[in-house]
Image 1: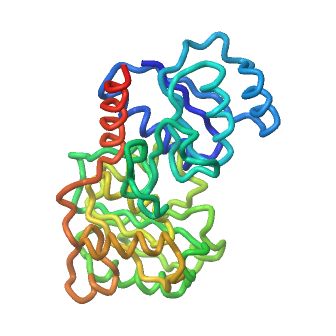
Image 2: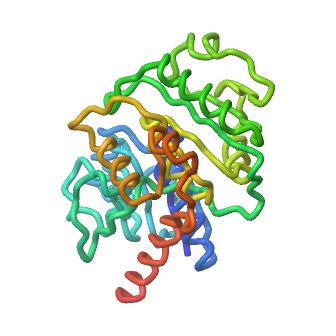
Image 3: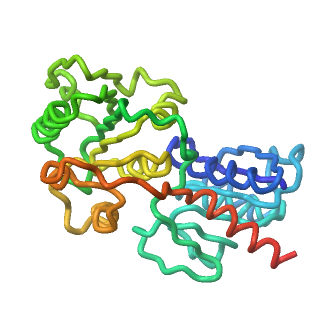
Length: 299
């Protein structure tokens, strides 16, 4: 199988596409080629002329996958010029019927149909690990977003409470590009807390942390990290922050809490235990199986 990935340069979007491509490769031998999304004008021209520059040396694709609005026109132009089936991840800016298959997170609010699969959160590359250490925990700090009202002081208080109540766990904490610049300077040192700013983490650092952490705490604005932690098989806690009542991400986090997939901080304080993650998410594998079954019906 030949798979083309159309990328817009955003790590989060590429993470989704690669997660699906790797899952497809676990079901059927696959060669994966990565192509940058073209500008709107160049993609339109390629679509009109049925010709794309720079792909002559590549084998004809069976699947062309893209995530992010900037990939959509290139995705359609590549299919028109080179064949294959177009698979779009996340709700597209163009009509869904223009794509062969759509894989959309549930918070996009679109119903499943014969050409649309709805997933628990965005896809990722994380797989369940048997090396998780119950004495190692991970704390993931996001930052300002439109989905929750960020409060550094409240998060600091919750971190201190977690440290005080978990004497048998050594914690590693990292930040994100959205974390306020003064957040780490406000955080007092602790003998069981190792702080690694996001600027000091190499590409494989976070997957390795997921693989070895028995427990993960995440700020609710970092929804993709919540789903990655659930995919790794860790027990997952989510810090409390005021939610924007119109936020789809806020709704998704509430749904996970109601289903006992995650534990909110206030609930953890009351019961002093996290909901066990007995069924790790494997959404990329589920999507890959769905695609392969769809392809079998077409050929």
